[in-house]
Image 1: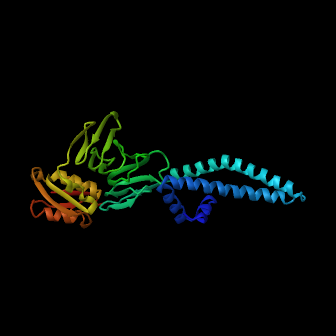
Image 2: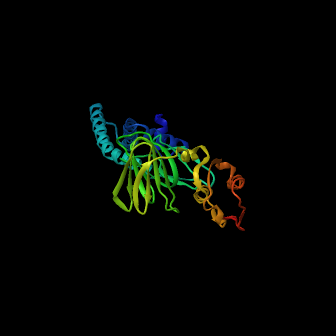
Image 3: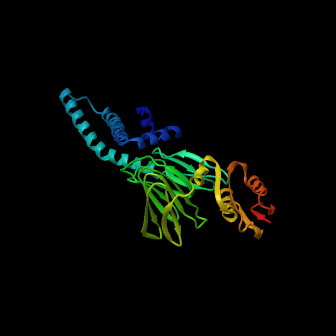
Length: 313
């Protein structure tokens, strides 16, 4: 990191792009934190030294040895002040960075892929919201999630990665897993593809589950249980697909509701036992999916006036 950029950051004159660059650089390695500390000390020393010189310039000329002694004492005083104040400013700066939160919300029918400050890659499904800090400065990497997300967590044994949801918290070190935890739904599940995760029930902290790869945890009636993953295609939503196999019509409509943020009312009772398999592109929209399903199941559908509800007739 260029020193000029760091000094502008310390002086509060850095642009938004420069601030983001400093935060990303700071989070990259512990050595960068130490370097920022050293540069902050030097920056503070320059400020203090400059003020002292300005004040002393008004004083009358002293003999050389007195001036030399004065400079030594001045330097020592600055050093003590910098060690005390520099640590405070550094820690304060770190706290400010860690307290700056970003929130991203994904509209219905869309998905987003982004990288967190630690290098973790996240895919957010439709109608999902995630909040995360500008830099992970504490001993834990904590984010909050309302919705569905797929994580590829950057490994850091010293800083566990924690996903906080309204129902359960998931703690990992470095792994690949999927979390579905919409606050407006009773459903919760975590599917592990690689590594290991610990899932903690918020209402019953003693009820934890340790998952091994290719297993999933589900919350039912307030209790967590683990089972093997039977269909990995379900998690292809991050590719923009809704995949389903031997799924009854009612469950599929619930999936559509989550994805497109619309209520679906099934009035046609003949569809209760209808089971279907297939896949749709999310971007093609719910009307397209319903028209394709009509070829195999006999029904009609219409929306209400404000188009917030679809009736299956």
